[in-house]
Image (cartoon, rainbow, N blue to C red; front, side, top):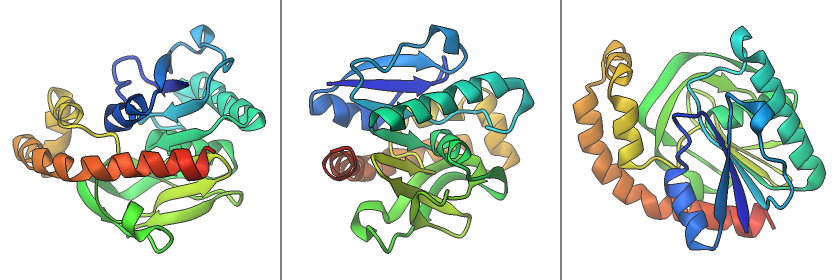
Length: 223
C-alpha cells in the first residue's frame, strides 16, 4: 500500500500518523508543495496525507501552489482516494470544497482541549495546536469536533480533516519551537523550552490516541 505525503519541502514529516501507517504496511512518496510541476501522479496511490504548513490558503504569493493542491484534492475525490488532512491540509480541504479560511481572532499554539459529541473517545482531549487561521466546514462535510476557537475536525466520504496535529512528535514540536519558532512563541507569551518539556509527556500520552485515530480512519473512512 502506498501513501502520498503532501507537505512543504522543509516540513514534510508525518510523525505519529506516518508511524502508524508504516506499522500497518504503508510505504510513502512525497509531493513538495513548492514544486507542483514535479508532483507524482495518483497512479498507485492508496491514501493521501495533507500535512500542515506555515502558509495560508488565501496568500497571494502561493496562489498557483494552492490551486494545484485543490486540483489534487478534486482528482483524488473523483478517483475515490482517501484523504487524511491536518491543519493547513484541512483548511485546504475547506477552501477546495466551498468553505472559507480566515485569520483567527485567537491563535492556538500549544496543547488545547478539543471536544466531540460524535466521537468523544476518539477525538476528545488535549491535542497539539499550531495555527493562526480557522476554517468553516463545507456543506458536503460534517463537523465532528470543535472547541471555542472553531471546528477541530470534519468528516466526509473517504475524507477526514483535523485542525489539530495528531502527527506531532517531540522532534516535530522541538523543530517548530527553535529558530524563528522561538520568536514566534515569545510573541504569544509561550516559553519554547517549557513547551518542549511539557510536550514530552503529552506526546507519550497522545501517541496511542493517534494510532487509534489512524486505525479508525483506515477502517471506517478510507474503506
